Image (cartoon, rainbow, N blue to C red; front, side, top):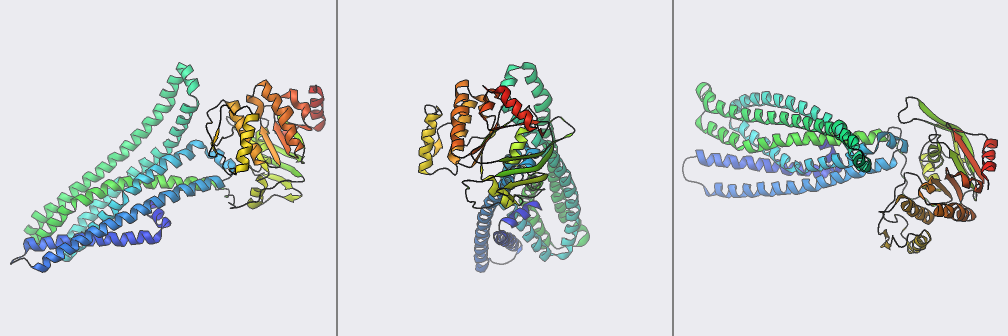
Length: 550
């Protein structure tokens, strides 16, 4: 069972200890029932030893039950923590292309929906373990009372449990189908929040989004979860029927045909009635654990799918490079499916080189492969063929690729702006950040408080300036800017192209600037133009520069 494997992986010792304590609790409960039966059916005066035994066993049952709950709560919280961290580490170690194929909706649904489901289910596990141990303990006592009656009881239980498991298998299949649709629902939620302005401005689009996308998916999930819960209810009803079937057999069938003595019948009836609550609770919790199993399985499957082409090696400490001599891409290619197209788009083969103190503009139409080339250049994508060489050494292994990436500072067009200076929190860098805020005309809108930005709720152009501030603080040998100036006003475009880029170049940085601002192309040392995934010949690039100079 998926839940058991999760707990065993978290801490085998704690789990086994909890099982031992749970069994002790169940055995103690069974012993209490035996004592009660003994007192009810016994003759003569009550013995003092019986009273002491009752008190001692009761205290043991209470202590073992409490200890089991405490151990399993700690084990559950540790399991959820490990599950979330393991998935987070797999996401960080997965190739970027795999993550892009999987998509943010599935990643977020696993980290949120599945993790919450696992958490809610594991919280109920202590009750399940204790109830299961109580049921087992009582069954052992029943076998002790009468093996003959117990065999008949087992036959009825096997029949009932077989039907119950068939119902739960159907419930699990429905849960699995519902879980697959949750990914689609998260994609719709992303469209709802990301496209809220467009939806508000266009009534027909808004109505169509609700009626044709969001509502049908949510309704399908509700239907599947409801049908799954119905099968759970059928299982509980079957369990209730099974319980009263057993009581009917004890009260009417066995006395009439088997000649079972009154003391045994009273003991069996008492235990079966006592078992009603733990059996009902167990059946309730089994359905919850089915959801946990589906959620945990989805998390595991996601972790495997994003690393199916190999996980990148995680290196605890990598020395920050300060310079390089030459970076070369030699015959590098990368192929992928573009959105709304059946054919694969191939970038390359690309051959280019970078040296310190050089500014290279990367230009071309939309869809020509500029951003893909930037991801290959920075090591975020692995080339399918060709080589990346740094100072004459070919970058091959994950460890080499990780060290290679540390040469780059990037601001992609879809950048993420962190609200604090992660990894850049030294007093010197924080002081430098304050100076840069003033230079980037942001000091009146943003303050630095305890190493954090007071706000990131700014316009896109201002957010890009904050991203540029972080890039300055990183102070790495190679800078890649993907359409950085696209959201800036004309004044700040001039600042970027005519002041900031020359300053970085003078500091010995190698600059790769993806841009459509042809009026600034003359400021580049080289202009590399892409068309349909290929580099246009150098003469064409030179003609482009000469035609736009001045």
